[in-house]
Length: 534
Image (cartoon, rainbow, N blue to C red; front, side, top):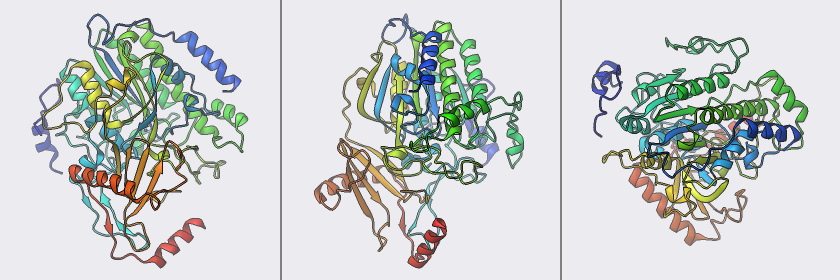
């Protein structure tokens, strides 16, 4: 790949930096909040296609962390309240078949920034906060006797050689700001070396040390790390501060064009919510309902409030009719209890039902995401699309939207979804998810790769049979969204067809593929399973 241009004042040249650096996340109350939000945030008026007056459109990418497909009232939750996300959908298009490229955060984030499958970049787990700098993908050297497979060793940094979405927009004259979670590498692999002028709070970790102030970013880091950020006012929620910082940036660059990455910390752990909101959802919770975690309710409402804060700022500044907004999730919701969360030891953080599984699994609950795109003059207001889209598609779509360039030596794996945004269909064969790791989470967590073509989804489960051979699961998602009926044995020809697509995908991306573990011991696996249950 070609070297990055020297495009940011005060930012060291990439090659010089590498020399210095070395090689080495509809109750009454909801109705009232919805009414309040509608009053506070009126929609933009009849914008012209492609922007206002020929100006390049602003871009805001809001990425929620660990937000499941059913974790908003827009997608059918009866417990969580998200009127501002509903308002966002009233302005644009809601997608029902939108997918993260991986069931964990860093890989999906890399796919958004590069348009490349995680299988290609090698970032396949959320390990970009670790101290070890691993830039080449490979297999682990060994595995525990309880594991059937030797799995991949994930790359731990988004290489500086990649020409990111932020760099493409910055080169096109955009002011660029990143706010919230990054999780694609410690310095020097931070946002300000990947195309962003501003990076707040300049944090490498997978989550904030705390949501409610004092945040203590510097104290939480176990290695020397300068976070040029205060600890907040007592009790201040970090998500509220990030929303304020986003609005401040928008105001400073209202004459545009600007590109904002508002990558929310919410709703990743540690699970903490404003006390008054936790109490609100505690009173509302029904233990018989799949979703009833009061802290999660509080966190989702705070996130939604800040989506509304951004919408109101765009309206007040008169730039809403020339701003593309993407709202998306980086992976599925946490579908199991957190035993260390005092008072809620047996309460699942969320439920992704009717989808199966959740975060860190290859089932639909792990990768199917809430997605709304607002593009004034392009997306019909209040529209819905059933087209299958992936996180790798945002790069070519947004670069195409502003007429920026894509490097010839970094062709994206994604496609421009403009036809779908206009209400049409996409001419694509299939999408993929490669997750060559074992996680041990409930209902899934085995290493595998899936392909979705039309209504059909095939999962190749690596080394997952008793003989450590690959196992297959085949589902018709149109008839069986919950992946309850495995049709692999009944439809061998369909399995063969789809597995050929997986094989081609793995070959073209040079993916790391798990292999049988020669040290595997079934008795050790049984003992490990018994300990987990106990």
